[in-house]
Length: 528
Ligand code: AMP
Image 1 (cartoon, rainbow, N blue to C red):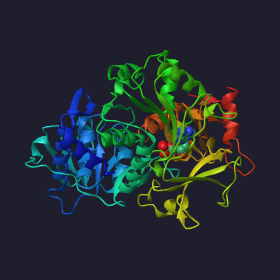
Image 2 (image 1 turned 180 degrees about the vertical axis):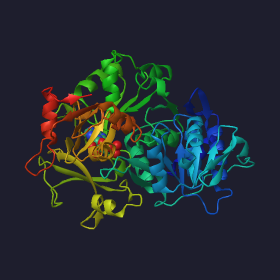
Image 3 (image 1 turned 90 degrees about the vertical axis):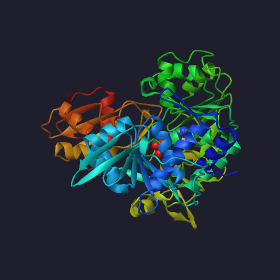
Image 4 (image 1 turned 135 degrees about the horizontal axis):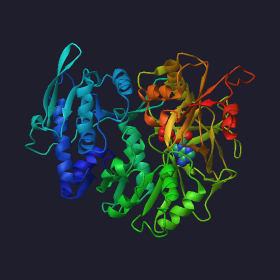
């Protein structure tokens, strides 16, 4: 059987077209309906283009247009670039500038953004597949036309998706970049196929399963939900934005059988007392990924979903979604002194090693940087050969991805996560390079004395960022507002503190540890 998600969808549509494929924004969409729309979008993307489209932007979120757009891009052999309409326009423009998209698929929110800021679409062709728009918009010196669903080509015969090669790109996912510019991880069709092969071996997903979709499309864990559900002919249930804070009721009403979230979501649900014993009887699998999984949360979740298998999954975007996993047993395998679940063993097809700074493999019990190789390791960063070479070096003739995670392997071959060796942090499950926040702070404040720290941090995951500045005349509120214009909301400092001087270490660098200690002591400084 093919390991291409679009091809699998087409097979399910042919065999069981009336089965539910997608529940989104109040719509129940069958495999026949979803694949017909995807095929028509694919045909539109190919039509009137000088060459087959390579990269299609998806300026849409939690809507039929978003999911049909992704499948439509895959239908015509293109890759997709998720563009969350909630991102500031400057960031969307940056990603558009880096990737040079061939076309853009938009939903109502995306359409609004393009109308307000036509340059986001330049020079892409724009399709609003679920709207009857027929707009002409002036974008700089040229006229831009937005095609609506009335312009989608009709489907007169079954139209299977184009077959793709293993090294064709499937999606480009932008993550925070330490140079101040987001970096695009290029994941190929072959990477996704390896992921699906590993999944098939590990989990017994079936057509009757009902998968959650909590993640935004610009977080690569969203790909797991789509790929896992649609590869077995199951249904994907997209949680509306308004229910993301407390998705317990959605889980119950949709009788979900497979749950996948960052641990922060479960922690929040625990705090809101939503993890009552027996609350989620429908769940068969409870999957967590993206940040350390606290033992205390697992204990509560186990009570709430007593029938479900719980897994702690680990992986960076650069190694396609996740590639290590620990199936929680009782008593659980806990990383000593951290109160979090071990990250487990590599999935089929992935090799993991702990290495030292000279890139030599370390033995059991020795902490070092976690490195990954195998079929899920991505091609690198889009149009950034320097960073790609640095992060994806050849070691003994094989390409490895250096994760920047500090880890060790125990005597049983189980890996344990100990934090980071750099300044990458997780804020409510979202990946953030503190240097990127600082680069923007410098521009906004017009001064170099800036530092960002993750705060407060519990079990290795932060719930916010505090910015420290010195020699700045701007009010804290003005700084936050300016940052909001540039960065996703989770990267905007929750607090801005102004000090007379920033503390420096022996190397002359700003001493982040001293700033964290200041916050721990509740230290005095000007704050806004
Ligand atoms: P992302 O590329 O956004 O998926 O973030 C990848 C990073 O998230 C990894 O390099 C780790 O630092 C962190 N991470 C992912 N999964 C886990 C996990 N199960 N436990 C601890 N950290 C994790």
